[in-house]
Amino acid sequence: MKPEMRSDEEKPKRAFSDKFLIKRLLKYLFIHKKLMLIALLTMIIQTVFFALGPYLIKVILDNYIDQNRRLEFLGIWFLYLMVIILSFFPMYIRRWVLLIAGEKSIYNLRKDTYEKLQDNSMDYFDKTPAGDSLARMTSDIASIQPILSGEFLMAFSSLFMLIGGLIVCFSISFPLTLVTLSVFPVIIIFAIFQRRLVRNKWDDYRNFNAKYIASMAESISGARVSQSFARSEYDRKDFDEINEEYYQKGLSAFRWSSIVNPFYQTYTKLTIVLVLLIGGSLTLQTQGVVTVGSLVLFILYLNQFLDPLIILTGVYALIQASFSAFERIVILLDTPPSITEIVDARPLSCHSGKIDLNKVTFSYDEGETMVLDDFSLSIQPNECIAIVGETGSGKTTIISLISRLYDIQEGSIQIDGQDIRNVTLASLRKSIGVVLQEPFLFSESVRYNLCYGKEASNEEIKEVLSLISAEFVYDLSDGLDTKVGERGGWLSLGQRQLISFARALITNPKVILLDEATSSIDPQAELQIQRALSKMLENRTSIIIAHRLSTVRAADRIIVLHAGKIIEKGTFDELLTQKGEFYNFYRLQFRHEE
Image (cartoon, rainbow, N blue to C red; front, side, top):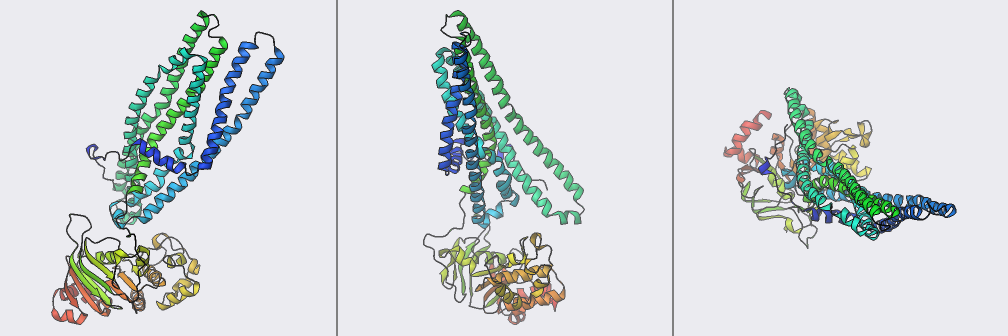
């Protein structure tokens, strides 16, 4: 299941600048203003302690080492000891506070990403592999976590200390500070070069990671098919190719990221060597202009000045890796759903369940062939309509449009005289019970699945289960609390269908939309399901995509579709008498069920 990759020429350009992404990150961080204020205060205290330590060493070297002032020396030494011990507390508090703020930010980012996925329209899920969405929720957020959980904020702390150290260095020796700053152009040039290269490498890696996860998700879900066709060996070869490409892309990204810290570590040490050479010369050639204590003090401060620079470069490399992942999440967060409510949308008042599709025109993608073209259909309250037709004729599309999973391009769809685009989505979908062709159950308990659309008491559940003769639930190992397995795999197909019927009925909808299952089941289960279906449709408006003869016979009216148009309609007997398209359809698909 090898994922299809774009060529280098086809890769999309970066959607957002680093500046924009940093602002979005800060938006998550600075929600926690109190924590940020505590971090700022402890940062200032820590910087004062760090600045005070080297200064005390200078005082000891210049005033007490050679002058036999033991008592004063011990006093300054004790003060230095206290500075080191007390510096632990602001460091600990700052780091702990930043970690709390970071974890809260990750929590909010996960929440926003999940809610966005929940709010997205069906066209997003049609075009986006499930594995890609899963990658954004898991590996992409995991890549951002180190940044939001302290590293990004540590960079601000380091920047603060960098500026403070630079000011102190200028106050000690202006010439030596200029020598230090003279090496900065090389650092800046390297940073610019490294940023462009590393970011592109990480973009490639993150994009392939999403395709890798999508491919693996598809491979795992298709394991039964793979083994049925004896494809396991071929799939292993496909995986080896994917894994090798994934490895090479990761190696390329990490290779260029790993050079950053060693380069800056070595370069900063060379800077100290240069300062020691020039400062030592000034100490020897000038009579006390630069004292030994001043030179040692400058080098100590220079270390404190350069250490934050090393931290910044390390965080910078981490940011480049994380921004590729964060950009993918921001693209998701900033993509508006195609299905939205109007400003003054009102709850749907569904009292009778009359449905009108008026001159509806619809295609899934702009410019493609219309699935429905100038399509009109009126369904009376409590009427049962069976829709039949060849694959691709628009049957499932009609159900999706009535639920407003997609928006039509032209025309209108009304329920009880109300345009579905003018009512709230929640009220519309709560008024409609949908039963899918492939019954989907969540890997929770039977009760969880039954009450998925509406919380219901044990009495309400029992009433619905009795109505459709689905009391088998109480014979399961833990009754309503029995786990059903992934996609309901621990239950039979017939049991899954009955539970999906009950789930739709518990919400007590006025309209039922049913895409009948095509899978074969045993005769006893078939009879039970038909009885349950009959009970479920009583006193409700219903549209059924019919695949069983018994359903077609029981319908009040049959609609025959071809290429998005109604070519025949009438009762079962009327359409057979006409000997038209439905008659041919009956002979091919239904007659063997007689």
